[in-house]
Image (tube, rainbow, N blue to C red; front, top):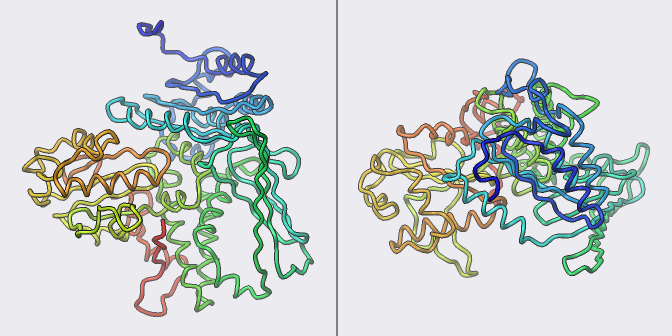
Length: 506
């Protein structure tokens, strides 16, 4: 390319976006922006003071919440202007250092797009992920120039709207583009002094232009029964939907006019969990309600919220942006990842089942008590996969899957390449085929593309990261196990059965 040999590393992102807006304002469409450095030139430049580069960790003193908010409003204004001309932004950021993602991410969020972030970018390790996500973004089915309106029965009101969109008026959601990758959340409240009808109806109408140029309207209508007894409500709560909504309400504490400290966001989740535990204690048939504190505990221990010095502010901001539009299954996976054992696969696991789908291993609870030193375990949170190999893992497993005789001979990066999409299906050993099938099947269920990282017990630094996923144990940032968390919330188990076993549907 014409700039291949340039040594200039400064960015004028704001001016580039302005030029692209002028060039496309008569037709709109999708704008794919690639950035690797903080913009320090041209429009909406971020100065050293504004970039707050000297504060690398989002857990320092009282600045953690401030660092998650934009330093300037210029990119918010640009997103609103782009939305007005029916242009959406897909923002790909692959930096080596801090870029003030909090100031840049509104470009994607407020124009109906997505943020893609690759911290400490290394092509050898992350190139496949970038490529897969670009291809997916370019080829997925899109709805253009979309507006959506949600209505609800008389006596009810929709008080909050969450997702990557802009709202005009009270109830019109505007999205220059929309895809099935994004989810919108609304909060419904009953009007004061109103007796609800036996059935409440919610209707969602989405008007958009498809890729063939046809103007299409899609309408979904949902009716649900109402009850007079709070006990009935408690007994029929969907814990996963509640966990997702609590996450949105938590993030609301960080937006104007409240702009609370991040510690207050954590306290908000704790307070809501205390109310949930109290309700469950008084409801003998509300076992599923006790799953909510487990999801909240996972959220508190995640990079989005954990109080530790290992989470750079840009990375935390990326996960906040991602949580803003994740589906229920992906949010649950982020809060409570799936863990599988790979060293003890039976005959059917890893093979195609009756419906042609790969049979996955049974999921395990996220505690080290489910692990063994001779085991191999895979964990995924919808964003990344990690494989942990114990020091006593069988040489037969190592040779069958990785073609090495001892764990010390294994190169984690080269081993991970064996499970790249291009290599899935290339194995000839029956066990290697099973492991490849499982990893390929898990990847196919998630968006975005999940990179695989392999760590060896007591040999690789990344092992600490793997154990941070074990949310039922004490972890960095929150030295509290699941049972200790429940006890602090006031839970008193009636019997020996463990409370809060997560639903395994996702």
